[in-house]
Length: 209
Image 1 (tube, rainbow, N blue to C red):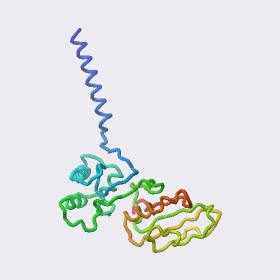
Image 2 (image 1 turned 45 degrees about the vertical axis):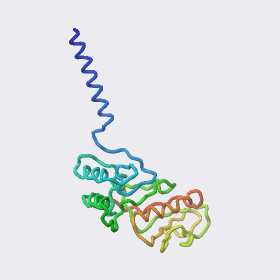
Image 3 (image 1 turned 180 degrees about the horizontal axis):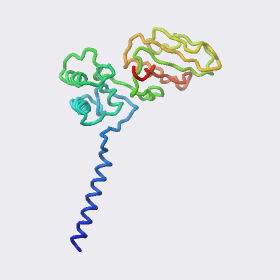
Image 4 (image 1 turned 135 degrees about the horizontal axis):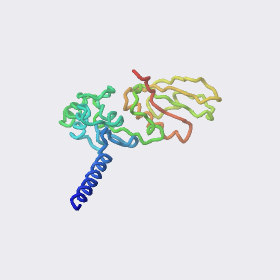
């Protein structure tokens, strides 16, 4: 009877340990990470620095030993080609070894903490040369490029035409294209969420592009 009781207790403890393990370490391996705040390109694990641990995390993802979130994949893509490959691993390693980083984005600080920038969907690809701006319709003003002096834009395209009945939507084209510059341009306009702008976002590409 005592042996049977011990077996039941042992079995219960083993089951408890298994359940604890499953909840603590999901089988998917998908890491839960924050999607707003200040980030560093190449900082895959989000510890505030780019180290060999980040290159290793990306290697494990590529070898299907673990799975990175969309946010982590965005910051792992240090050559900005919208793909995470061994090339990104090598780039991180080379920068850590003090090779010339060239056009690599390793170490670049990205701010996603503002009213508009915190809404950027990093799981979607977007154009690297422009942003889309929706202006609150109560602002009866015919906007032009000079109304967006916070960042270096070269031209503006009006998608709606001047009308007080609907919000005005414009596309602003960047002087210096780049994913990081798209985010920087949105950062520059974040404060206007409290004033005249309804939304500022990247120009997302259709699925398949």
